[in-house]
Image 1 (cartoon, rainbow over the protein chains, first blue to last red):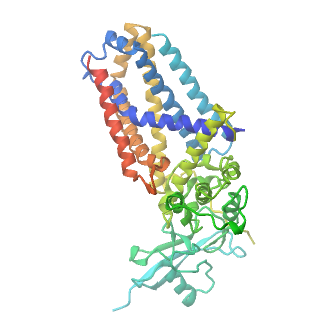
Image 2: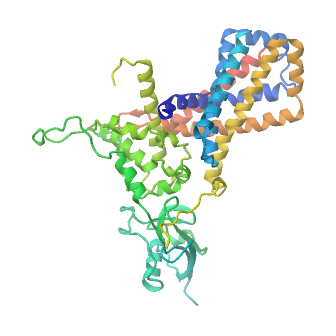
Image 3: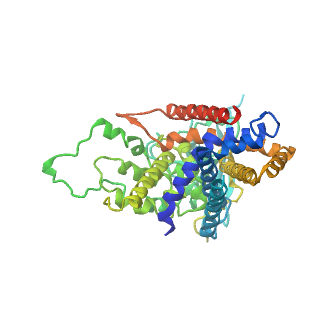
Length: 115
Length: 248
Length: 128
């Protein structure tokens, strides 16, 4: 019964929304704009980035930062498709969206565990 | 000098004569103290007696005169002509409901949904009358009072795109009313309402557009009620999954 | 003779009303944020793969198209942050006795946490 699993997906959506609200702006500004424009000095050199990311707390932080917003996206996108008129295949839409988030989570774990 | 007038464009549909609805324009005297309902009553009395619409109290209590006024769901007894004058006012039946005739919508779906959530006090064991009334502290009243203000005007359903797209959605007022009883200290019926609330077309359909709360003339905040129901259901769900031995 | 008339709902319903349009924008911010975390995941993968892989990916991120994407994603993320914090009081109802803690206070706590966390993250990343 799909209905009974909704609280689980909703809790991941809510957690992901909160993580994104708190951290996405500063993260996007740092790794998307500051580093790309070369304003970061030595902060993003290979050695420095490797040292920073290798710390267990950094990796836990990055796992949460990547995984939860993916579930947030999955939940919202699922309902956006319905809002835009996807009447058929609701279960399929949900499966594809949440499945993509699960896949992203597994990939994130695989990448982060190797540091 | 001529007296000022205002134009109303009114949605007309007669199921026995019309295939599709049309708009008819009426030019009527403009009075600063008139609401849209006064204008419609004027049309009914002086211009076109065939116009069908619902109304009763004229003072925002009965909840029967809801209409789309320039595309926004409002009580026509609370929408003043002066908010629109000198522009024309377009009046349509409440959105998202089937139209019986002119400005009259079919209420069946909403009435059915209202019953589904058991909006009354449910007791595991009724107390005999001789034991006296159920008493509440002011704090206990405050916990649900806002949600008890609903006048069943259905403006929230007309504002809700989720209901527009999925008519099976339980909808704002019914869920807010379920919360009203769930939050009442005298009530013990939460589990009976939960089946409907957490069903496929219950609270989880809501995507928090938030327009139900904007439309509500009684400041019930159905959107807030639905999100609180989601949070409460989620906490219950985790309790059941993580602590299956913890009882119901 | 026809029955009750059902008005059709066009799939462009969200373009007909400002509130619906802003709602749709809010929902679509999640697409930009998800795209960003995928790019971040690739950055980490390249970092793990070695110096050359990492540095070539940094050059890719420096391309004008990627910077423009991130500027748009930043705007989307900020819109998400504002809408999310402003809606939080709808979900979290805190009562002190009969009085409900006013929504601006709950939202304000969120904004304060946001400023502190953002500053902390920026400091940790940039202090080196």
